[in-house]
Length: 392
Ligand SMILES: CC(C)(COP(=O)(O)OP(=O)(O)OC[C@H]1O[C@@H](n2cnc3c(N)ncnc32)[C@H](O)[C@@H]1OP(=O)(O)O)[C@@H](O)C(=O)NCCC(=O)NCCS
Image (tube, rainbow, N blue to C red):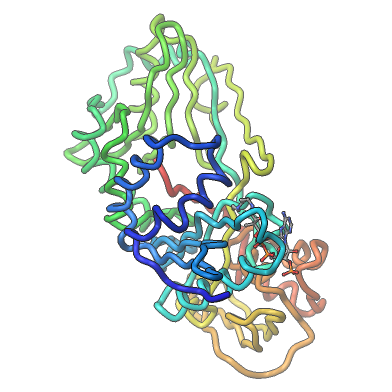
């Protein structure tokens, strides 16, 4: 077996049959294969690895170049996708070999973080990933927002076809990348495909700037208005977009919109009856997972006061002993020392992303946290809910 990096042009004849078999209804049609071939222009910057034997492709894995905000600092991130093995070659360690090489390569090329949507989290936990919150959907009748229909808000919303609204939408996501913990975006090459989506974009503007945008479609008269993430810079952008939704009263029965894990739709209006839910199942509806690929690169991350030495164990990428110090509101990471506190890469990543308390790390079996390390770790890495927006 040999591992080889291939170009996007080689993907349709090597990786795609594995992906299509794993993720699509099959047998697939010639039209589906041709449509996939046309998409390859959007994957020219991806790193594609395959495992081959006797000229046959047995497994593949891809890293998409992305950027992600971790506690206010934007890092390069490797978005892992298209992981699949031929059914007759499964459980031979092929994906383990591919992922180990892919993550090392991405780290060496400067990616400090990695994220993905798992088919089963326990599989990726073996590779150092930890679970992040899944996005939630709010479902409500537009009548619930009737207080907004005639409200005089200082701004306006324009409805545009995706092609026309794409530039402002894209610029808003790049702005939010700098402002929101967990937020992630693809590079320009991959993002360009979203311009082709058959969707509306509602763009909210106030004082000459974009303060919100949401991608949506209407499935039928008296049906649902189904929206993607409610992307806003703050409460005014949200109010403008909700007002736009409210004005669909008597046109659609329900609004279904994706919201960040820290949004609270029941507070959007006094008489708003709303169901806010996040259903997690595998493999259909997983929450995302993420990990740190380069711990030294977290120097400079906003952090509380405290100092502690930890050992990261069982991980080729970030294994070793580190001194972590919060100094003047910023984290300093240095190698060396010794410690009774032993964290797996997933445990360390859970602290860095703000999704696990040091006590959770221990109770989840992601490390041994010495009693003296609990308070410093809690102070250095206070809880912070990441919002992993990465797609329209
Ligand atoms: C999931 C899949 C990619 C695994 O590929 P594979 O080449 O069989 O994986 P490996 O043999 O390298 O296994 C790697 C490790 O994961 C474990 N593992 C494999 N399949 C697993 C599963 N379904 N659930 C939990 N663990 C699993 C293996 O035991 C192995 O553990 P070890 O290295 O500690 O011994 C493959 O079964 C597949 O293509 N499935 C359908 C498509 C899919 O779900 N892709 C993932 C999308 S996120």
